[in-house]
Image (cartoon, rainbow over all chains, first blue to last red; front, top):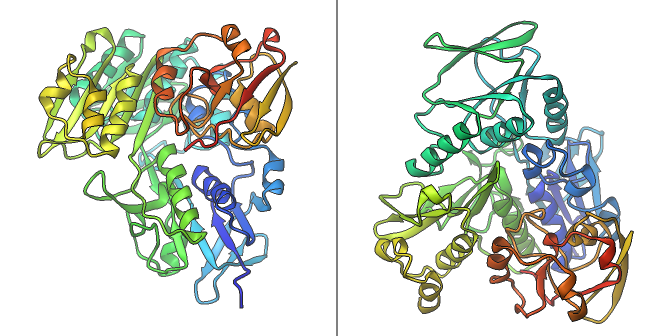
Length: 409
Length: 107
């Protein structure tokens, strides 16, 4: 008997959307259900902290596809619907609409949710987070009235919001708990560059800042640190990372760790169930271990990989990770995963605001961060894909053409 | 509104009305033009909105900036002298009738 239940995809973010679209592109003929609790068409998240807040991009520009795309491709899109339970024995999910859906293949693209600030006063009005479209709309609206913004968290999201708010003429302070900005993803040199960039544009950057509480009577009025420092604020925006949505999988007895545990085929401990995107803890050949990545690249490439597998062309996930962040007029592009590097060299002069940092582990190139050097970034992706032999001396020497290294590898 | 003609590798074409200021990539995605993906949302990171521009329009387009130049080097289909990224071309009235061909593959 032919399988006819088809594929159910949980989550309408970039990973879920890409899985559905790629299944059809691969010629998958069975029913596809794409279900998620957000009440919107699938949309892009990167603009939410940048172009969308600054009114440079409207809703119609951030939707991944117009509504008719889903009908045209026979994708049954259920928005504003939550999956409440997973019955692995019956190969069925329950929806909060009261309905059940059967599956032959289930893809968990459940995403992640904001890590909440665990301090007194965090529930006050005026303490906001930014991950979803609705949250971005709230931030955008509240920014109009606000004059003093405190951003808690000096990672990508926090710094992008800080740059956006500063571009709107607001007074902005960034509080980072670690000794430097974006500590988990970039080298100290890059952190220092960003501290200088933000400070130069009028943002107050405070590192080693341990937030002790948010003061205010109903509405937030200041952020206090454990050392007693007080930063007045009429808006507090928190960007301190995310927690993967692994509960549906865990409650169904699937293996979970830092997310839903999958193998190199993005398959969970149940062969009919896969996980992709922000929620998937997967083996990543570019870090020599397991990773959980939060990026457009990872979401889209994992969606496409799993779609190929479900459509009968079993594929391993081995795409080069890449990321970007736009802050003010500076673009940082990252290729590979620099975590665990033992040597870093610079190509170009940081003072020119155009340089790249090449990261090595055991003398092998593992990642490249490029600031306003798009050609370096694109070449880095190529070098990493082809596992080209590049020495730190070659990387640092601008007389050496990176293109040649890629070709001869 | 100005018109853009998207021609598929099969020769099939689709004419789309595009508001001034909207990128060709956004217009193509909104109108369901097959073969224009725009994975990164139009920030010149992914090379999935590659197009070939009909020669007589090339001079009317904004020049290729560094970022586009870099990304054009890694398009999946062959880069030709008339290759552009459709996310980097904003529509203007002067481009009315712009005709572009979609490459056979984007990734």
